[in-house]
Image 1 (cartoon, helix red, strand yellow):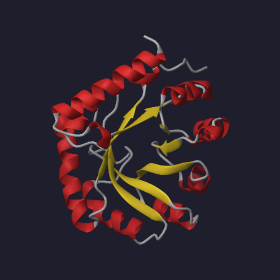
Image 2 (cartoon, rainbow, N blue to C red):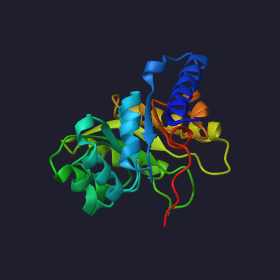
Image 3 (cartoon, rainbow, N blue to C red):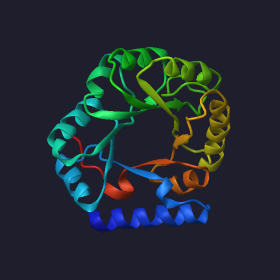
Image 4 (cartoon, one colour):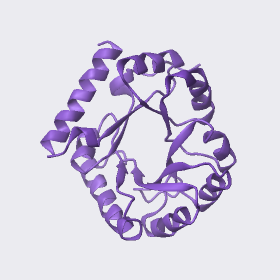
Length: 222
């Protein structure tokens, strides 16, 4: 399949899954993750109608955003972000999906740049994995709410490998319900990737982070 065929097929499948869940397809934002692919592919995607692009490595994201600055795309940073790279990331990204600690909130807020953020929830027992543990979610949310420049959109999570994604996303919904009591505006859920976006849509996903289903296999890295 060509890039155009994969893109259109994925969008059609997302829309179908939304309708099956009794949802409006327009309520779902599909972020195309272009990890390891060149800026030329981003241009192709933009020509096909893509508006939202995601990256999880700052150096790669910054370079691609600079090369495609004329396209008016919305860049989403979805990977682990070092606090000392916060200001640099906000030079191109206006949505950060991976806020998982107070020091990162403070670094982002210190820039004074308006940005939208998701709190990344760790769905495993491994503290080395990205994300805040469920019991610390409220405290982190309060930090964002007090920041002044950051708008809290909701929760981001990755379904653990080997676990039924539907069960994992149900835990996200539970956490979201608790978060909404503290921040009623934080209604969004950034869940779902190439292999589990249908389950994510059924669970209420508002943002999907889809890579290989659209872009194809990643180029080999030297």
